[in-house]
Each structure stands twice: as C-alpha cells, then as structure tokens.
Length: 261
Image (cartoon, helix red, strand yellow):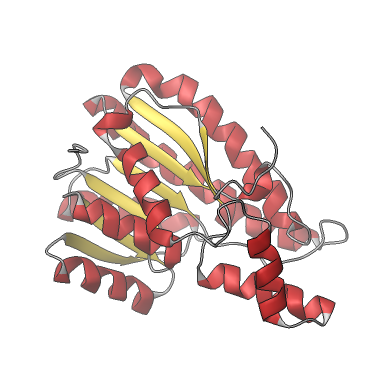
C-alpha cells in the first residue's frame, strides 16, 4: 500500500526514544523527510544515522519542549532545510511517577508547560501552513492512562487527558481544511520508559522486577509487551493519505490491555 508520504515533511518529537524513534524510522521508510527532534542530541543523532543508513532523509534537531521561546526559530529552520511541516507527531516525555495528591504546584506548572502547552503552541505554529496547503496531520501520542488511570502516574493521567479534549476540539476546527487530528494511546510497549516504570513499581513493592513484568504481561490479552515498530506502523497510517477520513479519534495500540469499551 502506498501511504502517499513521499517527500512530505514530518516533525517527530521524542524521536530519540523507543516510540518516537520507531515512528521516525517508519515515516522515513515511507519516503517522508523526517525531522528527528529530541532533548537528547546523541539519541536523536542515532535515529538520524539509522534513517540515513537505510536510505532515508532525516535532520537532527535538539529541542527542549519546556522552552517555548525556541518554537518559532526551530520551525523556521525546518522550513528552510526541509520545507513546511506536513505531519506533526506530538510525542512528549513522561513525568516522574507520583501520586496525584500533594504535588508541588511548581511541578504541575513545569510539566504542563512541557507536556501540554508546548504541544498546543507548536501545533499553532504549523497550522497556518497546513491550512494554506489544504493538507496536514496532527498526531498526538498520550497514554492508556487517559482511558484507565494508571496508579502512581497522577500527573501523567491528568495532563495527558487534557490533550485528548484539545485534539478532539481541534479536529472539528480544521477538518474542512484537509487536516486531521488524532490521539494514539500506547499500552505496554517495550521501551526504556516501561522498563523504568516496572523497576519503580518493583522498588515500591519490594518485589523482583521480573515478577512485576510477568504480572503486567499476564494482564495483556495478546500476552506480551508491544514492539515499538507496531506502534510506529499505526502512527504512519494515521499520517498517510489513506487515513484522510480518520479524525477526532483516539486509537489504542495496547494489545487489548484496556478493558473498557
């Protein structure tokens, strides 16, 4: 299937990590020009190297999402080097695992700026060009916690849910401009983030990490953690010409983990 992404410019955040890296490599494999954005320059560079080694086009961009002042300059550099952004993949890092009660207001404000406000501001920066060209894809990766809150991920559950309301509202506002806006929910995908969360849970409960991981895997109908590539494939489809009638949706990539309808 031709996804119609050849020579489209895609900006992928968190592209030095497991999910973002898989998304970036998959989009590049479909012929897109991919901007690999990450706070960690070495990780971003590794993804760029992998894409170029496979014959794709990629550009590394070190980007601190907590700093809203860099948005206009960074987008401007992308437009000069790769052209206007056609596909925006909002994939932010997760906050530290904590209860929802008793957190310092400064922690809430800092995480809101990097996880939510940055996404909104970056999207607002690229939307005018998408509207002018009558084509665009806004894809926001959140967490299964927006459907079934995850214990001890209080900040993540709260802030990521706000992006669901934003994305759904945006979909109605830009649909007639040829732009789609969708949310993708990862379940237990085998990334460093999931390993970290398993380790933290094992530490809190004074249990072996292997037991925590086995218990988690047992709760997934497919019986295993997901592969980041499986997640990247779903995002690539949503970014494609083939998904032109999918908007305002929340897509679960969770192996059946979330029990609610």
